[in-house]
Length: 273
Image (cartoon, rainbow, N blue to C red; front, side, top):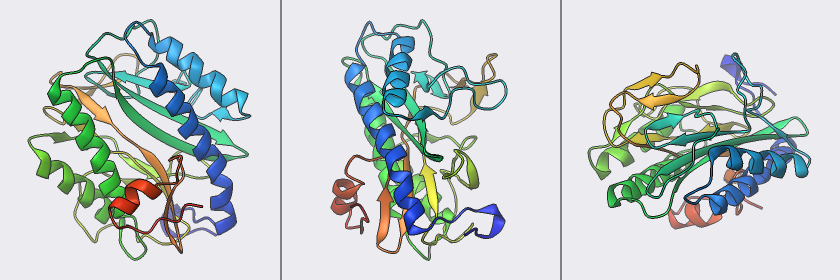
Protein backbone atom coordinates (compact mmCIF):
# COMPACT_ATOMS: atom_id res chain seq x y z
CA UNK A 1 0.00 0.00 0.00
CA UNK A 2 1.01 3.63 -0.28
CA UNK A 3 1.16 6.23 2.45
CA UNK A 4 0.47 9.95 2.23
CA UNK A 5 2.92 12.44 0.69
CA UNK A 6 3.78 9.83 -1.96
CA UNK A 7 5.51 7.61 0.61
CA UNK A 8 5.72 3.94 -0.36
CA UNK A 9 4.82 1.47 2.39
CA UNK A 10 5.84 -2.14 1.91
CA UNK A 11 4.07 -5.29 2.99
CA UNK A 12 6.09 -7.72 5.14
CA UNK A 13 6.58 -9.87 2.03
CA UNK A 14 7.94 -6.89 0.08
CA UNK A 15 10.38 -6.06 2.85
CA UNK A 16 11.60 -9.65 2.64
CA UNK A 17 12.03 -9.12 -1.11
CA UNK A 18 14.26 -6.10 -0.43
CA UNK A 19 16.70 -8.14 1.65
CA UNK A 20 18.58 -9.79 -1.28
CA UNK A 21 19.48 -6.37 -2.69
CA UNK A 22 20.53 -5.21 0.77
CA UNK A 23 22.68 -8.28 1.32
CA UNK A 24 24.30 -7.88 -2.09
CA UNK A 25 25.22 -4.30 -1.26
CA UNK A 26 26.60 -5.43 2.11
CA UNK A 27 28.69 -8.15 0.50
CA UNK A 28 29.97 -5.78 -2.18
CA UNK A 29 31.00 -3.16 0.38
CA UNK A 30 32.76 -5.84 2.44
CA UNK A 31 34.78 -6.84 -0.64
CA UNK A 32 35.59 -3.21 -1.39
CA UNK A 33 36.67 -2.52 2.20
CA UNK A 34 39.09 -5.43 1.96
CA UNK A 35 40.42 -4.13 -1.36
CA UNK A 36 41.16 -0.59 -0.14
CA UNK A 37 44.90 -0.04 0.25
CA UNK A 38 47.57 2.43 -0.90
CA UNK A 39 48.22 2.05 -4.63
CA UNK A 40 44.70 0.96 -5.60
CA UNK A 41 42.80 3.23 -7.98
CA UNK A 42 39.18 4.19 -7.54
CA UNK A 43 38.52 2.73 -11.01
CA UNK A 44 39.79 -0.66 -9.80
CA UNK A 45 37.40 -0.50 -6.86
CA UNK A 46 34.56 0.37 -9.22
CA UNK A 47 35.35 -2.59 -11.47
CA UNK A 48 35.34 -4.91 -8.45
CA UNK A 49 31.96 -3.55 -7.37
CA UNK A 50 30.38 -3.99 -10.78
CA UNK A 51 31.68 -7.54 -11.22
CA UNK A 52 30.48 -8.48 -7.71
CA UNK A 53 26.98 -7.08 -8.24
CA UNK A 54 26.48 -8.44 -11.76
CA UNK A 55 28.06 -11.77 -10.85
CA UNK A 56 25.37 -12.25 -8.20
CA UNK A 57 22.57 -11.42 -10.62
CA UNK A 58 22.06 -7.83 -9.54
CA UNK A 59 22.25 -4.55 -11.43
CA UNK A 60 24.18 -1.47 -10.22
CA UNK A 61 21.66 1.17 -9.14
CA UNK A 62 23.95 4.13 -9.77
CA UNK A 63 25.31 3.44 -13.25
CA UNK A 64 23.44 5.62 -15.74
CA UNK A 65 21.39 7.25 -13.01
CA UNK A 66 19.96 10.77 -13.47
CA UNK A 67 21.24 13.53 -15.76
CA UNK A 68 24.06 13.75 -16.60
CA UNK A 69 24.11 9.95 -16.25
CA UNK A 70 26.36 8.80 -13.43
CA UNK A 71 29.12 6.84 -15.19
CA UNK A 72 30.06 4.26 -12.56
CA UNK A 73 28.82 1.57 -10.18
CA UNK A 74 30.03 3.21 -6.96
CA UNK A 75 30.56 6.72 -5.71
CA UNK A 76 34.19 6.97 -4.57
CA UNK A 77 34.71 10.15 -2.56
CA UNK A 78 38.24 10.80 -1.28
CA UNK A 79 39.27 13.14 1.53
CA UNK A 80 37.45 16.48 1.03
CA UNK A 81 34.94 14.87 -1.36
CA UNK A 82 31.71 14.42 0.58
CA UNK A 83 29.58 12.33 -1.78
CA UNK A 84 29.12 11.36 -5.44
CA UNK A 85 32.81 11.19 -6.34
CA UNK A 86 33.31 9.61 -9.78
CA UNK A 87 35.78 6.69 -9.86
CA UNK A 88 38.73 7.09 -12.20
CA UNK A 89 42.51 7.08 -12.35
CA UNK A 90 43.01 8.50 -8.85
CA UNK A 91 45.34 6.23 -6.87
CA UNK A 92 44.77 6.01 -3.14
CA UNK A 93 47.62 7.15 -0.92
CA UNK A 94 48.55 6.14 2.61
CA UNK A 95 46.61 8.39 5.00
CA UNK A 96 43.66 9.04 2.67
CA UNK A 97 40.07 8.28 3.57
CA UNK A 98 37.61 7.04 0.95
CA UNK A 99 33.83 7.04 1.27
CA UNK A 100 32.29 4.33 -0.91
CA UNK A 101 28.58 4.52 -1.69
CA UNK A 102 27.05 1.49 -3.41
CA UNK A 103 23.60 0.62 -4.69
CA UNK A 104 22.16 -2.52 -6.26
CA UNK A 105 18.78 -3.60 -7.54
CA UNK A 106 17.60 -7.22 -7.36
CA UNK A 107 14.23 -8.25 -8.77
CA UNK A 108 13.07 -4.64 -8.83
CA UNK A 109 14.05 -3.75 -5.23
CA UNK A 110 16.89 -1.46 -4.25
CA UNK A 111 19.56 -1.49 -1.57
CA UNK A 112 21.84 1.48 -0.84
CA UNK A 113 24.65 1.80 1.70
CA UNK A 114 27.96 3.57 2.25
CA UNK A 115 31.12 3.11 4.29
CA UNK A 116 34.12 5.35 4.91
CA UNK A 117 37.40 3.46 4.94
CA UNK A 118 40.87 4.56 6.06
CA UNK A 119 43.67 3.98 3.56
CA UNK A 120 46.67 2.62 5.42
CA UNK A 121 47.45 4.62 8.55
CA UNK A 122 45.37 7.78 8.93
CA UNK A 123 45.66 10.70 11.33
CA UNK A 124 43.96 10.30 14.73
CA UNK A 125 41.52 13.10 13.88
CA UNK A 126 40.44 11.18 10.78
CA UNK A 127 40.03 7.94 12.75
CA UNK A 128 37.77 9.82 15.14
CA UNK A 129 35.79 11.36 12.27
CA UNK A 130 35.06 7.89 10.93
CA UNK A 131 33.97 6.65 14.35
CA UNK A 132 31.70 9.63 14.96
CA UNK A 133 30.05 9.27 11.56
CA UNK A 134 29.42 5.54 11.93
CA UNK A 135 28.07 5.95 15.46
CA UNK A 136 25.82 8.81 14.29
CA UNK A 137 24.37 6.48 11.67
CA UNK A 138 23.44 3.94 14.33
CA UNK A 139 22.02 6.65 16.56
CA UNK A 140 19.73 7.58 13.67
CA UNK A 141 18.79 3.95 13.01
CA UNK A 142 17.97 3.48 16.71
CA UNK A 143 15.48 6.38 16.43
CA UNK A 144 13.68 4.67 13.52
CA UNK A 145 10.75 3.29 15.50
CA UNK A 146 6.99 3.16 15.11
CA UNK A 147 5.16 6.28 16.27
CA UNK A 148 8.18 8.55 15.97
CA UNK A 149 8.73 10.96 13.08
CA UNK A 150 11.45 11.53 10.51
CA UNK A 151 12.63 14.53 12.53
CA UNK A 152 13.44 12.20 15.42
CA UNK A 153 15.97 10.41 13.21
CA UNK A 154 17.44 13.74 12.08
CA UNK A 155 17.63 14.98 15.66
CA UNK A 156 19.31 11.78 16.85
CA UNK A 157 22.01 12.03 14.18
CA UNK A 158 22.67 15.71 14.81
CA UNK A 159 22.64 15.38 18.61
CA UNK A 160 25.13 12.54 18.53
CA UNK A 161 27.56 14.41 16.29
CA UNK A 162 27.31 17.69 18.23
CA UNK A 163 28.09 15.85 21.47
CA UNK A 164 31.37 14.55 20.03
CA UNK A 165 33.05 17.87 19.25
CA UNK A 166 33.27 20.65 16.70
CA UNK A 167 32.21 18.68 13.64
CA UNK A 168 30.11 19.94 10.76
CA UNK A 169 26.98 18.05 9.74
CA UNK A 170 26.20 18.40 6.03
CA UNK A 171 22.70 19.75 5.44
CA UNK A 172 22.70 20.07 1.63
CA UNK A 173 22.31 16.32 1.07
CA UNK A 174 20.01 13.94 2.92
CA UNK A 175 18.88 10.39 3.34
CA UNK A 176 15.75 9.23 1.55
CA UNK A 177 13.01 6.71 1.16
CA UNK A 178 13.90 3.62 -0.83
CA UNK A 179 12.23 0.51 -2.21
CA UNK A 180 10.91 0.05 -5.74
CA UNK A 181 13.10 3.06 -6.66
CA UNK A 182 16.43 4.17 -5.25
CA UNK A 183 15.34 7.67 -4.21
CA UNK A 184 11.79 8.16 -2.93
CA UNK A 185 9.99 10.35 -0.41
CA UNK A 186 10.54 11.20 2.35
CA UNK A 187 13.84 13.05 2.64
CA UNK A 188 15.74 12.20 5.83
CA UNK A 189 17.85 15.23 6.86
CA UNK A 190 20.81 14.83 9.20
CA UNK A 191 19.82 17.86 11.26
CA UNK A 192 16.38 18.64 12.57
CA UNK A 193 13.91 19.01 15.35
CA UNK A 194 12.18 16.04 16.99
CA UNK A 195 8.51 15.27 16.40
CA UNK A 196 8.55 16.89 12.96
CA UNK A 197 7.98 15.39 9.54
CA UNK A 198 6.20 12.25 8.36
CA UNK A 199 5.27 9.64 10.93
CA UNK A 200 7.33 6.44 11.05
CA UNK A 201 5.13 3.37 10.55
CA UNK A 202 5.75 -0.32 9.78
CA UNK A 203 6.34 -0.83 6.07
CA UNK A 204 8.49 2.27 5.67
CA UNK A 205 12.02 1.80 4.29
CA UNK A 206 14.63 4.54 4.59
CA UNK A 207 18.25 5.08 3.61
CA UNK A 208 19.75 6.91 6.59
CA UNK A 209 23.09 8.53 5.75
CA UNK A 210 24.94 11.07 7.89
CA UNK A 211 27.72 13.08 6.24
CA UNK A 212 30.11 14.61 8.77
CA UNK A 213 33.07 16.91 8.17
CA UNK A 214 36.05 18.19 10.13
CA UNK A 215 35.27 21.82 9.27
CA UNK A 216 32.41 23.82 7.81
CA UNK A 217 29.36 21.89 6.53
CA UNK A 218 29.14 24.13 3.45
CA UNK A 219 29.60 22.25 0.19
CA UNK A 220 30.35 22.94 -3.46
CA UNK A 221 29.60 21.00 -6.65
CA UNK A 222 32.48 20.37 -9.06
CA UNK A 223 32.30 20.91 -12.81
CA UNK A 224 31.59 17.21 -13.42
CA UNK A 225 28.11 18.00 -12.01
CA UNK A 226 28.37 15.12 -9.54
CA UNK A 227 31.26 15.38 -7.10
CA UNK A 228 30.38 17.27 -3.92
CA UNK A 229 33.30 18.69 -1.92
CA UNK A 230 33.58 20.69 1.26
CA UNK A 231 33.79 24.41 0.56
CA UNK A 232 36.72 24.84 2.96
CA UNK A 233 38.66 21.73 1.93
CA UNK A 234 38.10 19.92 5.21
CA UNK A 235 37.86 16.13 5.14
CA UNK A 236 34.55 14.30 5.18
CA UNK A 237 33.05 10.94 6.04
CA UNK A 238 29.80 9.27 4.97
CA UNK A 239 27.98 6.25 6.39
CA UNK A 240 24.67 4.79 5.21
CA UNK A 241 22.32 1.84 5.62
CA UNK A 242 18.99 0.87 4.09
CA UNK A 243 16.57 0.07 6.92
CA UNK A 244 12.98 -1.13 7.04
CA UNK A 245 10.54 -0.72 9.91
CA UNK A 246 8.52 -3.82 10.75
CA UNK A 247 6.06 -4.76 13.48
CA UNK A 248 9.03 -6.34 15.31
CA UNK A 249 11.37 -3.36 15.06
CA UNK A 250 13.92 -2.11 12.56
CA UNK A 251 15.66 -4.41 10.08
CA UNK A 252 18.94 -3.08 8.67
CA UNK A 253 18.72 -4.61 5.22
CA UNK A 254 22.26 -3.65 4.17
CA UNK A 255 23.96 -5.03 7.29
CA UNK A 256 25.16 -8.63 7.03
CA UNK A 257 23.61 -9.43 10.42
CA UNK A 258 20.54 -7.27 9.84
CA UNK A 259 21.78 -4.82 12.46
CA UNK A 260 21.50 -7.26 15.37
CA UNK A 261 24.89 -6.55 16.97
CA UNK A 262 24.85 -2.76 16.90
CA UNK A 263 21.16 -2.40 17.73
CA UNK A 264 21.45 -4.97 20.50
CA UNK A 265 24.26 -2.96 22.06
CA UNK A 266 21.95 0.06 22.03
CA UNK A 267 19.07 -1.89 23.55
CA UNK A 268 16.93 -1.44 20.43
CA UNK A 269 14.69 -4.23 19.05
CA UNK A 270 16.00 -5.67 15.81
CA UNK A 271 13.77 -7.48 13.34
CA UNK A 272 16.61 -9.34 11.60
CA UNK A 273 15.98 -12.94 10.64
